Image (cartoon, rainbow over all chains, first blue to last red; front, side, top):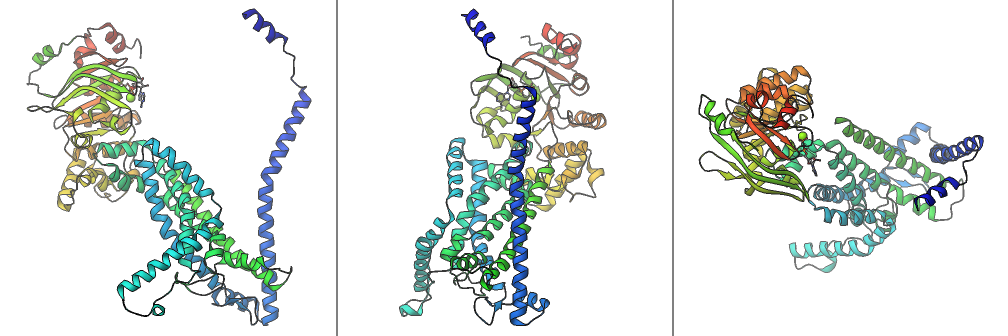
Length: 337
Length: 267
Ligand SMILES: Nc1ncnc2c1ncn2[C@@H]1O[C@H](COP(=O)(O)OP(=O)(O)O)[C@@H](O)[C@H]1O
Ligand SMILES: [Mg+2]
């Protein structure tokens, strides 16, 4: 037996390719990998270039149609409260779209930050290994649900429930009025959409906060337990302060995701730009405006076409800024230990 | 195993009081047994050193005293660790949190909490629900004085504990353990992450502290055991091979294994 296997080994054909072939093969592989890596960077650069050049054209058109200077156009863009680039006279104030975005994000964070943090503390510090093994994959699946599903969930489940609750509360507090005297939550509203955004961002925030808690060194955890602290005391007094910059990064990255979220708000928050911070109203967000306009047949070079780039660049800078901030915060917490 | 303990007791001038006693202790990490039938006394206001080669179970034994093993699933104790002079209680049957409130611990690597120097010391009182500012102030000052750190930090109590040097951080951790007035303080190789000068200051501190508290220290460094301890336990492969007063362990060990280890022939 031993003799056999030995002879099999020595009879193996020598399949090693020649040295030159090997070197060239490695070079080709390295080249292909490099192209794959560089393509994403190039794509990003091209996107930034297009955003910029189209936005420049947008302002040129504004200057031409409204006969204003670039400065006036910019001031109008950043301070105007009317966004109606599709109808003359042109409203080019970006504030209504930003207000819509901020309102839905704020509602979303009100859901995602507390729930995400509590869930992360539970998963990281309290959950038995078995529970963790079940819950973590579920969270990951939730993070993978297409957001349009959350949009319809907001429209068809969250909003009807909210309507009932809001009506019920009013009837309880001010009974005996006519049905139409009570405030009716519109079918499209930023509250329902914001809650759905929060549910969408929740697994993401939870997983990042959990990572930050897990990164706290064991010595600190044990140091606290050795002082006679309970699990909850340890989590609140030692782990959260130790992980604070990672947790802040989690919130910021969650916010950045909420800002960029499109389908939920397009489906459930309404498509009319309106300058309001009231979550009980319907209003378009920046992303919702972009999809709604691009859903129509947009002639290339038309003013409508240009306007989505002006809105898009705002979005680009907002998310870029927050991602960079989040990146540096999460880097910092790695360096502390 | 030999137990020349009674002899040791007789040779001491002052009377010795047994504060704690380990009886027939076995410990298991899941299925693997890490401690085998350990028996040893801990004398009040003395320093007891645990020595032995790496992996022999020194840390494991130390962490039985404050029930650290309860933090992780699958660990199991058998036997008793009795604490108390008059009415001994079995630590292994008490609530772990209650145990940890009576037994302080200083770790290998200084581990100040991400809080101010003041709050680091006050931590043990805070987790007991003490909020009285005057009391906290008093305890913080006394603990820092006892840990020989007060003069260095009295003007910067609000600064983070992590802003101190390594040796100062370790003294901060000692002060933190002292603040709750524990029966025993456990030290797990407290100087192995420190430079020689900081090491000397920690050793001197340990020698002074034994006037007020009982100390159990794991050390890798035999000279350190000689310098700071009055009693020494030599462990090997999860067993306690020999326990005696430190002088005897190092000058006239009974067991061959002990003799080999303290003369540097292995480990
Ligand atoms: N968490 C653990 N799980 C399983 N085995 C462990 C664990 N910690 C330590 N051990 C084992 O227990 C034995 C004693 O370890 P330890 O007490 O750390 O030794 P020492 O402190 O004397 O170097 C070693 O064989 C080690 O591998
Ligand atoms: Mg050890």
